[in-house]
Length: 422
Ligand SMILES: *Cc1c(COP(=O)(O)O)cnc(C)c1O
Image 1: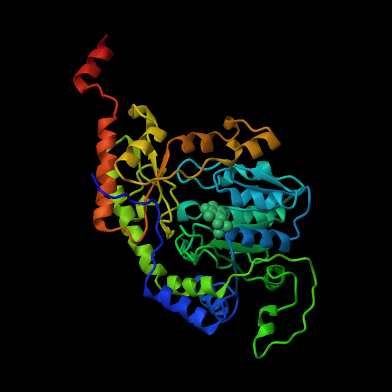
Image 2: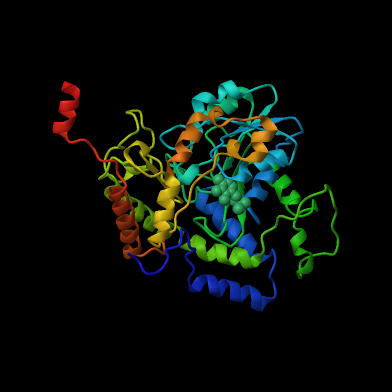
């Protein structure tokens, strides 16, 4: 057993992060300034977006995006129960209704075949969540949005750097007439970490301009420059905006992280491949979708599996337990792993199980049966670039030993034959 605790998540911070932050501190420009602008430019380039607006969280980015598409009280926004609090709370900020649609069992993403029946005349937008860093079915979602005149706001908190087919998440949709924004998170545990932070990407000038103004008190463009040499004391308030700007301290860290984002992704991909080949050895475990990218054919998707061409960001490694083969449940396994010094987590407790949404809309667990069922057997394992090969092996040994220890005794072929004969 390991003698030190392996945290579930850790940021990968090196000398460049320190250098950028020191530069900001020494220059005296510690809030939004040149580094935030440079981070926006380089991030936009990296995902092929026309505009990137740096903010202080993904939650802020989604709030701004919904404001920019003019979401109103009583409107409806379609998303999934299988997500973090932020995705639905931003809809509630407007007194609008998050309308939940169940997930696909194979990859935890929104089931596009259930979207149309959830659309009403009040529906204004769809928020697909690219869970774990594997993209939702954007082609289908885009054609539904085009047919019903809906906006698409992508919750890409897990999806950097992710590709949907050949297209980076962050780039425009195939149909550019659909109001569209993509929101990324740079929270401490995410694939690009600035402590707190987020980015809103869009190719649409009107959405970008509105978000830029509303992210900084609703004051006219480039207000951040007013204390620089080229700035002016004059500004105008055009709307009651928010305080969502990213500091240069965070942006400097973002610049350092962006430069190594691909190396970090490759390391996570390598860890996922190592996990997959180990966990495939037992029927008590189901490895995550996206596995077909690395270890031959997808082991459980049907033959129409469309995931082959996507690039998985591997923000999360969402393992599933086949509970009928085990004598312990997920919560007990988490406790056992903790005693083995392995930190794990669960993604996510579906929104409809939480008191706020349950009581507000009268949900029962079975209202979204797939989300409910998959949640009970999901276990997220550590996957981050700072993990050593030994860390990865420690996770594998702890999981495999416990699975063996707590597997139900399987009747031998001989005994099974006897049972059938009787
Ligand atoms: C982390 C996360 C968010 C929120 O990101 P913040 O930057 O912390 O606001 C939103 N959606 C999902 C799915 C997340 O995991």
